[in-house]
Length: 242
Image (cartoon, rainbow, N blue to C red; front, side, top):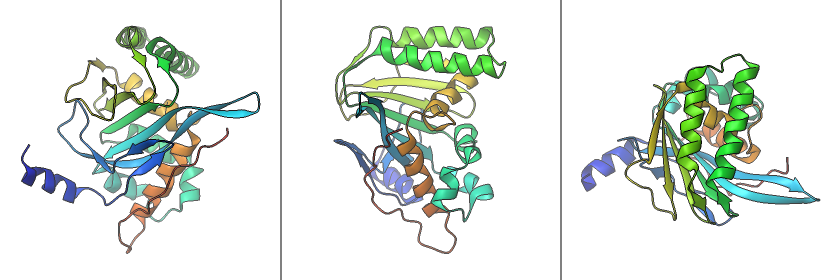
């Protein structure tokens, strides 16, 4: 891609800043595997758990959105405050199911095996689908493929698990051992419910990263403010102890 085309793509994106979560820096724009587009950083935060009185941080998570996400979300959420968006399950649902591409970067803070990560994600997805009675043979097959993609992987600190989610239903899975972003994914799974469930597990009703949700709400709220410059103030995501 030429420098001129890169410049044109970046100029069309909302003006946002990077976010640092622990030692992980999420840049303001990124070109994900499985897409020819450039996405902007919607928000970022930490995933952790309270263990014996201490908040242990496992991963840092950045959520990127296609540029037309702002226009799509503005129809319903224009002018809402960060607090109003943070408290709205429908807002995060509109991000998960919206007619625009999403890219999620999960960077390890502590070592993690592919088996550990994929089994937990699969467990959460299957439990939710069974609850809403949407667990079919197609979802079962998608979960099996998901587990296989991760089976031989290991993620030392600083490595990343990458998901590119298409509104048409494909989930492109990629891996990186550093800050680089590969050009191509390792696998593509064609299942809309799984594609949406991966992001839902992070920012949905029982999302594993409340701080990523707060970051998304604050930054999108700023972008949707009418008659004000579309810039998002730099902020370091603060881990939530819940």
